[in-house]
Amino acid sequence: MMNYSEIYEQELLDNVMPFWMKYSIDEENGGYFNCLDRFGNVFDTDKFMWLQAREVWTFATLYHEQEQKPAWLAAAKHGADFLESHGRDEAGNWYFSLDQFGNPLVQPYNIFSDCFACMAFAALYKADPQPKYAEIAKSTFDNILKRRANPKGKYNKAFPGTRALKNFALPMILSNLSLEMEHLLDQQVVDGLLKDVIHEVMDVFYQQDTGLILENVNLDGSFSDSFDGRLVNPGHIIEAMWFMMDLGVRLNDKRLIEKATDIALKSLDYGWDKEFGGIFYFLDIKNKPVQQLEWDQKLWWVHLESLVCMAKGYALTGRTECKDWFEKLHAYTWSHFRDPEHGEWFAYLNRRGEVLLPLKGGKWKCCFHVPRALFQIAQTMKQVVA
Image (cartoon, rainbow, N blue to C red; front, top):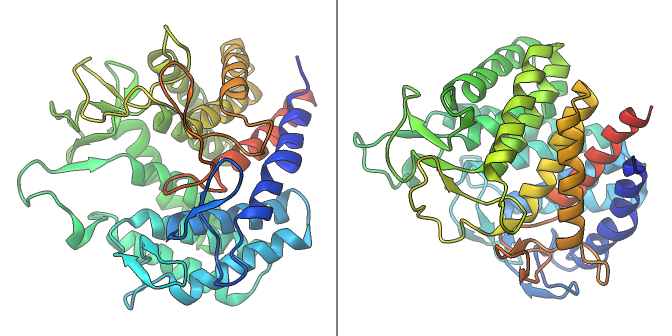
């Protein structure tokens, strides 16, 4: 078996992080430029709060867990200062986007800005334990829990009292956020939250008949035979399963780890494009046409999170299916997404695996999934080698 730990760590340190350090930091106005083309040129100056926060998290986490490089800590604090000064409305909700100077552009309709701001300041507190970082993380976390039942609040487009669905994304993110916030929360709060999110992910959204997880279910957890109710996002499922594996380790719950591994393997087999390779973005559980026109695209984060999941599955269970899938994913991902010429990785491929958009950062991609995955895999594979 190749020395994957060394390969992934070298890619993180030599190819990916230098790209973001060189091109994304806005020295004049604060924060980071999100929208970078293949060569690192800024093609749009809008700043998206959840991406700004993700980049803070990345720099802070690498400083705390990989190597205490002063430049990484300085970059994390640079982004955090911008977020602290401009990121929230008067009620403490985090905007979706700002202009380059920090003026609000899009209202705080999306709770994921709050979730990643919470992660960012929790991680920064580990790297530089200033009380204000802990306070921002905890107050944001409290706000998330208040909005949990209706994340979009007044910005919800659904007509009240009709087809009420709940979405998988929030319990999925909370399953990771609960561990990211553990050092700042009361243990009873953490224990209760862990129990809730595991139940939501592994019981409510999980469908026993297919062995898969749906993106949306009725409020009582039952199936909704509609566009939204039939929707499957293989990448979301697989990413959530490595969150569940981490929770299984935290709780010493081997059954949870095994079940998460089973679901991840089932999702990979279901989502893999048997004709062209790679993992589909969206599918319909009844094989009906999906509403997302990008359904057959191959996305960077889906494949990277799958690699993380299979690395953890193999390290924790020793199952050869995980090892086989890791090697299959590694071959596809490194040959299609990685840019050996100009650094970082491409984000969007068409179904055939050709680069669809040559950007390195945009409205949905930033300094997060690629470096986090590379770091997670490098650390996990050290356990396998050991």
